[in-house]
Amino acid sequence: MTDLETPMAVPRAPALRRAAPALLGYAAVRALGLVVLAGWSAARGKSAYTLLTARWDSLWYTRVAGPGYGYEVRLPNGDVHSNLAFFPLLPWLERLLHAVAPLSYADAGFTVSLLASLAAAWGIFAVTDVVYGPRVGVCAVLLWAVLPVGIVQSMAYSESLFTALAAWSLYAVLTGRWVTAGVLAALAGLTRPVGLAVVVAVWTAGVVSFVRDRSSGARDGGADQPGGAHTDERASEVSSAARARRAPQTTGAPHATRAPHITTADAPPWRRALGMLLAPVGAAAYVLWVGHRTGRGPLGYLDVQAGWRNGFDGGYAFARFVADKFTSFPSALAGAGLILGVGLLLWLYVTGVRQRQPLPLLVYTGVVLALALCASSYFGSKPRLLLPAFPLLLPLARALARLRTGRSALVTAGVAVASAVYGAFWLNGSGPP
Picture 1 (tube, one colour):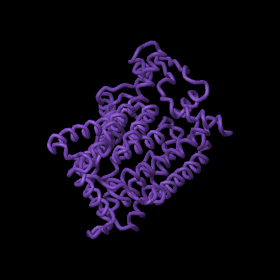
Picture 2 (cartoon, rainbow, N blue to C red; picture 1 turned 90 degrees about the vertical axis):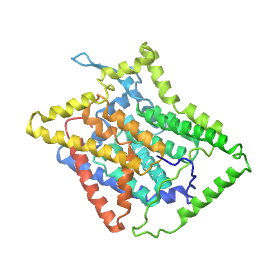
Picture 3 (cartoon, rainbow, N blue to C red; picture 1 turned 180 degrees about the vertical axis):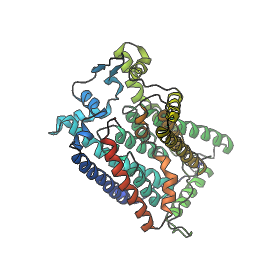
Picture 4 (cartoon, one colour; picture 1 turned 90 degrees about the horizontal axis):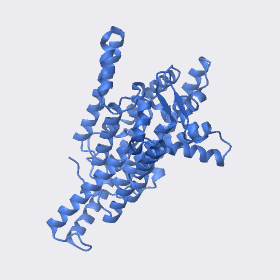
């Protein structure tokens, strides 16, 4: 399904300069979204900054950053909402910024999200650049920016921070930086429960690489040793891949993209093993700490989530929610829209498989999709829970990259305006995003 053996040269141009067009485009889209939000909120007598920093989950994070864990709300129906449900990395960073700068916890959360969103955009570009080249990388970043729920990237939520850590961890896996991948996966595991997706991606890539090495060693009979024939063959492949990246495109479509060829095994076995061992440390440490604090053992975190009516039921609750929409005509339109939306997500994932996306990306995206769609959590939050699943955008980015630059810019600008208007309408609504 995915080529894990043919190495690809990492781009040699300075990383920031190479990513500059994507980052500038991303900043412009997010600035547009914030301007529209400010205008819309002012017209309704609300504070856009409050919507971004001091409502819904943002408040829960500041309560962790300030008083610490232990705050909970008991609802009339008996549910218990505990701030133990919120992973600690974002509030730790809020507390750090509050200590070193004249910022409130809310200000610190907003600052972290702005910086993390830029880091996430850079990481998405880096991953896409390695797989498909810089033009598709720019398109992928812009598509991530103009998502209908893209305004969440500027909120004092943990989505931007998590996406940054996940993207750079995946980039490290694809380029053979296993220890870095493991450290970033551990940090992602301290950010959101979906950090499991990064861990599974790192572990899957590691296991496949070890299996491939074992089968290759048995087949070559030691030719993989330094100076052997296999090493020479790999060096030739790296050189060929580097020349292919520098060669001008000659196809009919401008800047046509190529099929991905990625190596995940060009590192000493001990580095791969260390990266795999580090990857689950963050999530495991927090879940075990919550179990110890609550006195409920390793499953204590699941009990905390149950107090929020969050759980994994294979999508049963979500399916019932969609089915209930068809009990009346106006809501049936919303139900049809939800079905179309889920169908689009699955189609994009299948397209990624057919286009032979690297295995770590497919595994990561599959886990994010499963956790978002099959959880029994608040259904209005599912769109933002899918924000980290950026590899789903790669088929669309490839299609956008095939358009002429002017047409591509026009399409992106139109969608950016629509996204900004929808984001302003969404945040000024009654329910949490």
